[in-house]
Image 1 (cartoon, helix red, strand yellow):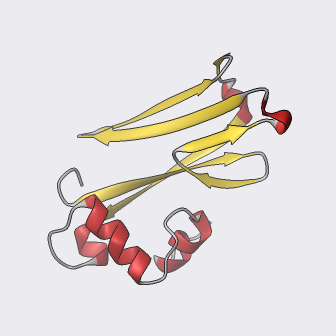
Image 2: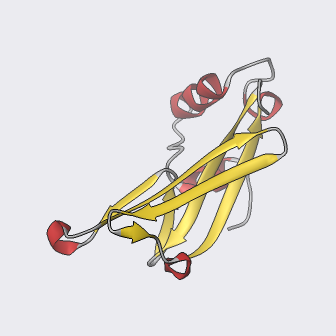
Image 3: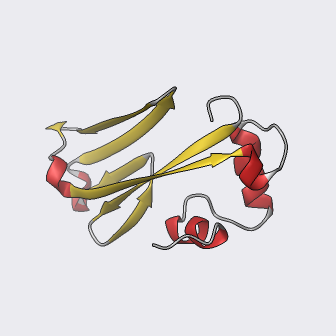
Amino acid sequence: VIDHGVVLGFCFFSTDWWSLPLTWESTGGTSRQYVLHSYDLNTITLWAYMSSGVLDPSAITQYRFLIITDNTVTKSASSGSEIIERLTNLGVDVNDYYEVMDYFGLEY
């Protein structure tokens, strides 16, 4: 996955699934919340913070990560950006949790 794949991250915030990285601004712009992720061999790392300090972890109830290898999309060696480009060209919005799940025939 590191060399020939991509990890798409999503979190359930408020009432819907949002793609990572997530930036959310409160009404009136008084604060911002950020949730980011990165991945490496055997590891997915999350960062969550607010403009005014640490993000309350109870604000996000679930995280889901879709690990997509080159064999599932292109059938050849591809980088993460090439996989995302290929999905986009196929009409899949990689920022839309439901579209990605539907494309791969996965249950929500």
